[in-house]
Image 1 (cartoon, rainbow, N blue to C red):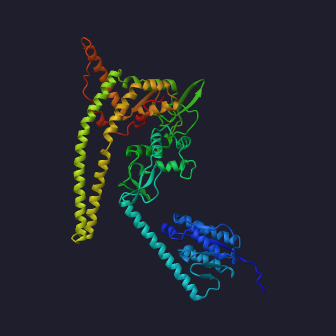
Image 2 (image 1 turned 45 degrees about the vertical axis):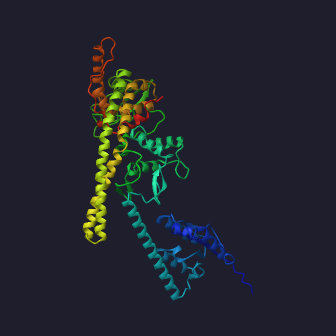
Image 3 (image 1 turned 90 degrees about the vertical axis):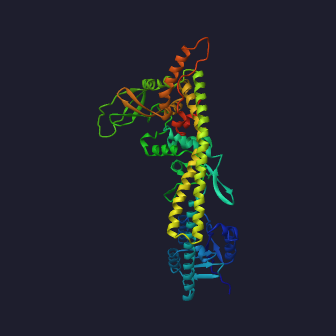
Length: 540
């Protein structure tokens, strides 16, 4: 008699746990093919196969398992096909879910094809014992694998390596047989520019999202880089040389930094001060988000009327009506601020050339100092590493107690990391400062001309390189300056005055000589102060 009963519905569940399994015949495709062949002439495979790759997180695995169980219950599927027990479940919770599911219907079963093992409602006691034992073994394997992974991650972090995929702006490369994160020249410029633009205070994250999409930056998926991702990237200390892993910061990152720590700190400050993070608008005033009232602490609000921009504070804090509230007109505020251009500008090109000569001479002196410093740091670093080697030898020979070894190793490792950081900081900073010093003076010389030709956004950017804080006190704008501008205000007027005196004393056409003593410019200027200035000396 022929059995005309309809075939039972089945689903396929595949999973690999490691890259090694993927590469040694246990791939998802190989599992799916084997289970499909097994189901042929036995069951009707319904729905898509449920596949879990080696890179899946615990949450993703849980989500896929729950999706499968929801599907089999909704569509009255009776059979789950899986390669082995440890592919389906590695914890008692999932095993209990499978057990309850099986005992709701006598037709339900799970086939572990490679182990030739079937579990269902009628499974005998000794077979249930085998099932329980294999689930326990799978759980042990999973926990042991997790411990080994965590151990590996901890070791990588101790070596200054991030145990994850490279951050945007970096790529994976082979070095001495190990994978390391190196700068990706295609995406790194985008990341540098992202930090620099946001640090000016003129760019919101929404605006960065739009601008970088227009410039061609894409997520790994090929889609737009969303504002949530940009926000995460701007908070990542990886870009200045540290590692963030599970909410813990490790200061000994071995990757080459893309930005300075000072620039990173400036970005974090702006991220936290949401009131000073401007919203992107197509038509925005020159001083939107830039001027604060001394009376109530409110940011000036701007509106356009009859061809002019007007502003006043928006009464933050305890004040219903600000006692200092005064209307401002944008062009009059602009006149107060741009008067600084005449003060910080070298008198003419001859003064500018003299400044550059002074800076280059100072650079040569500091280069010699730097070389001496590098030699000194290398000597100290060699001494620390030699002491670490001796400490390891003492441990191997059992001459050092474990507690003493761990304590001394931690001390020496911290010292080694500090010296390595000092060497990196000393690397190219002097050359960068020379270029920055020259660029800032050139910008000061051309600032007025640049400003007159600039767009609103370009003017905002230029002003952010000159002023750090603007306070409204009635009709007066009280100004705080960047380090670079403060230095220019301090010594350029003296330089211009000395040049004028020297020029008046010139006899018979002899070249005037600057009497001003050499400024300690390179020593006072931070390498990050005005970095955007260096890259944008000319707007047009």
